[in-house]
Image 1 (cartoon, rainbow, N blue to C red):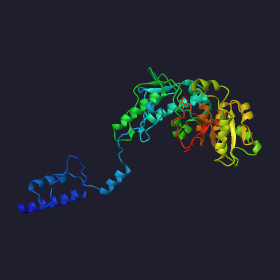
Image 2 (cartoon, one colour; image 1 turned 60 degrees about the vertical axis):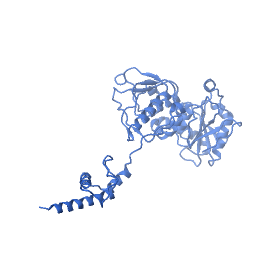
Image 3 (tube, one colour; image 1 turned 120 degrees about the vertical axis):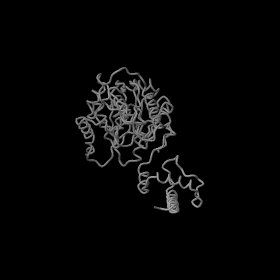
Image 4 (cartoon, rainbow, N blue to C red; image 1 turned 60 degrees about the horizontal axis):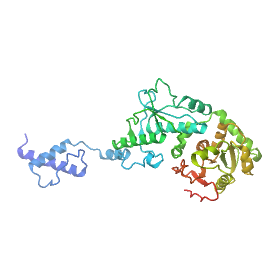
Length: 405
């Protein structure tokens, strides 16, 4: 049996070893159990020694190498402190790329959902469909298309995957709302959820009411940020793409080339005229784009590409032949809008006009996009676009050239 003196020596030795341990690994695992600041290993009282032993016995064995590796591999994200400007304040569509919102299951029929206006032509419907899809992609909400929109898009694209609204699972009344107001509501909810967690995954649903978006959303800044994703939403049916390539090949016969066999870049151009003059004047107080805008856009690419060829698709090919056609500018003969859109998307780069058809066709391509430089404050559809592939080109000789990035 150990003597009292031996017990004291053993306790003192254990205490010194424990103290050295604390000095080597000072990071406490429990912020409420810190050592007193005035502990001195040369003047330990028996009470201090016993307290020190209690602390040391409760400390787990540390694997310092593994701990540091884990901290480096899996850092805990900081809570959101300075969110981007709110959509309703900026008029733009920011998103929190650091976060992932767990999608609400499509078959969870008790959860709220969102539908969108299905009016308009092909370009409108594509914008509305993509806008709705992005709500699910970014905020995890349940979404549903309406019958007519699905039927129209399904004719030309083989990748229309969003569910059609069915009474059995999309039930209850819906509130009408603009896309901007709904996006703002979801963005705020996501930002609040992040401030209440240290995880980068948001599990709780962000939507508490079903909504119907009544307007014609086309968040072009958001579309360009998700260009590759939108490519997956709209894959042309084989017959549409086959005819589009054939239309391009017919135009290239005079160059003894085909779309797949050529030694020059193709810049596709969209010119919309027949039904757009009244629309531009009524909504934006704008006039039709004239020859000068397209000439400026041609020059923009000629300065940057070697021997580009410009292929024009239009609802007014007669005007295009009279005003634009040249040795390096050809007009594609087609009467099917979907084939024009597919041909437009096949360009190496793109020249657009104002409409949704023109923008979506270029968006489905991979190259640079030129757009009319417009100072009219009523036309704000591209005000928030800040992309290295998007270039504003003067529509008249009175406008200053936009400084490219």
